[in-house]
Length: 129
Image (cartoon, rainbow, N blue to C red; front, side, top):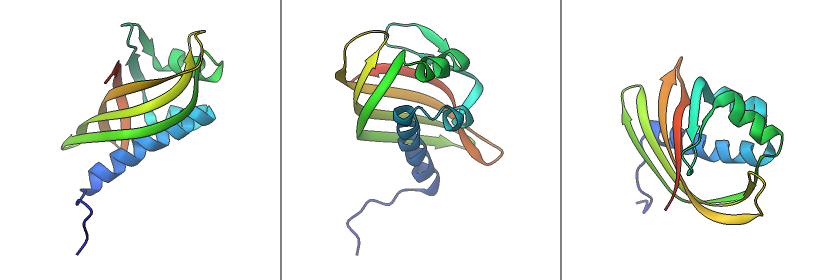
């Protein structure tokens, strides 16, 4: 008998999506990041600044947003049909918007939608935890 909690398949997929997103942010893999964000994706930063997908990915590519490492503390997933809420909490080592390199306790809350059988990030809000 396993002591591991049972995770529904959709929850597993979304947790994997969260982890892949971080890997690609650290690698600056813009092609993969483009695939997992909807064309109308918007990220709301802790400051309240809203960054559309193209600007967000450009900021990653050009080094305005630099991510060096990520350690996941918690991922919560709530699925309703082809829509989901995904909240990830991670300790992220980064240097962003010209600031120095620091480790933050970053929470990202995403609206996610299953489109053509694939989970896509629709909207994200960053905060601390």
